[in-house]
Image (cartoon, rainbow, N blue to C red; front, side):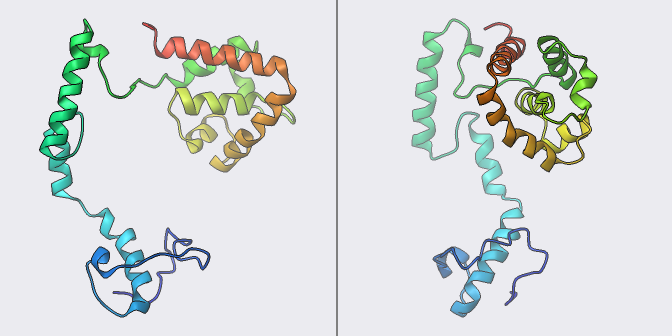
Length: 198
C-alpha cells in the first residue's frame, strides 16, 4: 500500500484539506496506521472499484427491471405486471423513458431550417452569435454527443470551448426573446423527431 498519493492521480481533490472523511478499516477491508487510511482509501477508489465484480454482473442478469433481494424483485415484478394489465401494448410499459439519439446531421438540419441559416454557419466563429451555443445544446441533448464530440463537429477546438458557450447561453436567452422563442420551437421539433409516435 502506498503511503503517499500517486502524482498522476485522477482524483486530486479527494483528500483536499477542506473535506473531512471518516475512514473505517471495515470499509477499506484493511487495517494499518490511521495516518495511512486516506491513501488506502484513495487507492481503493482508484483501483479497487475498477476491478470486475462477478457478483454484481450476475445480479444484473437476474432481473431486467431491478437489482435487489428476492422480495424486492418480486415487489417490482408485481408493479410491472399491474402496469402491463393497464396497457394494451406491453412495449408501452417501462420504468424509465428510453429513446434513440438523433443523427447529428438531422439535428443541425432542423436547427438550420428554424434559424434560417446554412448548416455551415454553426461551424463559423462569430463574436456575439448564439448559433454555436444553440447547436451545442441540442447536439448534446438530442444527438447524444459529448462536449468533445460537439467541439470536433463544430470546429470549436475543445470541449471547454463548448462548455463556455453553454454557460453563456442563458444570458443570451434572457436578453433575446426571439432567440428564446426559436429555442422552444427547436426543442419541440426535435422532440417530435425523436418521438414520432407521441
